[in-house]
Length: 148
Image 1 (cartoon, rainbow, N blue to C red):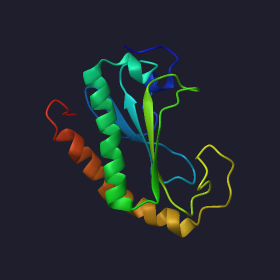
Image 2 (cartoon, rainbow, N blue to C red):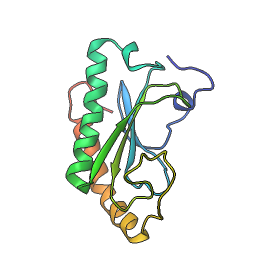
Image 3 (cartoon, helix red, strand yellow):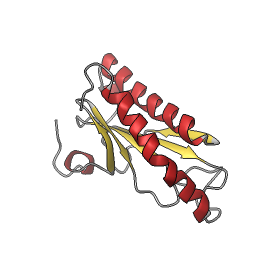
């Protein structure tokens, strides 16, 4: 089900890395956070508990897979997982690789900035993204029932 006026129903919400029958994985354009991804559930539901048990498991497993690939490819200090939906009440998980040099660390990505992110550190992460995103796509397209 799609809802008119919902930005995640009407648009991708970022650069699509994978799109399957139940969810898509996108890279968000968040300045200073070069490894900020979202798992967006395709049907417009507001809360995680709106999903039947099997779909909840599929949704959280998708977030876990994104986290695992970020850890394998980028070795972040921490990976943040969040599902807020206050501004966009459409179920989506934020999966964000965090680094000690990022603009807000150790605060949340929505906290006030504490520093500027070094351009060379951002460039280094950006250089690793193509292989990371190929691996994300491979993991999801190789799962039964999740072919794009």
